[in-house]
Amino acid sequence: MFSPLVERLVNTLKILPSVGPKSAQRMALHLLERDPQGAHQLVESLSEALDKVGRCESCRNLSETPVCGLCKNPRRDRTTLCVVESPADLVAIESSGTYSGMYFCLLGRLSPIDGMGPDEIGVPQFTQRLKEGEVKEVILATNATMEGEATAHFLSEISRSHSVGVSRIAQGVPLGGELEYVDGGTLAHAFSGRQKVN
Image 1 (cartoon, rainbow, N blue to C red):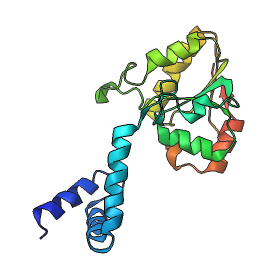
Image 2 (tube, rainbow, N blue to C red):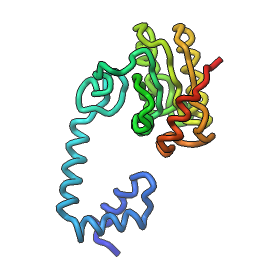
Image 3 (cartoon, rainbow, N blue to C red):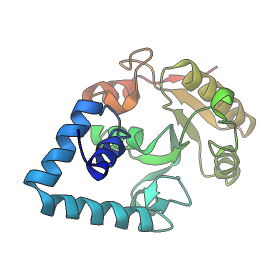
């Protein structure tokens, strides 16, 4: 139906989340037919981001610099450390405007089946942050899934072993829900209603 290059573009676009065959086809045809300049800008932006964006040495969020702007910000509360599964979760929490502490991005959750163990989610770096003694409270904001709960439990044990208080966001975040898709008001409520973990 399509030439090999167009077919390849359609198949490549299907790697994006929530993009099926029809959506990928519409995007490919739009870029090629109606917005070739936009397509070139997309290629340039993606290429530059892939070359220049890495991970913050402190929080593991996406950053073009060794330490990201959030971690450099002197107005952030360095005694609280919010643990999230992904940069998308961090963005969702920041958008709520109710949290002013520091972050730690796991870049996943414990899942032996998927090859995600403690090293893959940054437990050595997390432990080092706690050893530095600045953090007084860890807020566990992992997703309310089986793997997210297991990860939260594992990290709470590590936090307690370093005499750091632990709380877990709870109210307002639906069981099985992904933080990335929760609105700001619901997240604000979840943070204000967080509970200590026993």
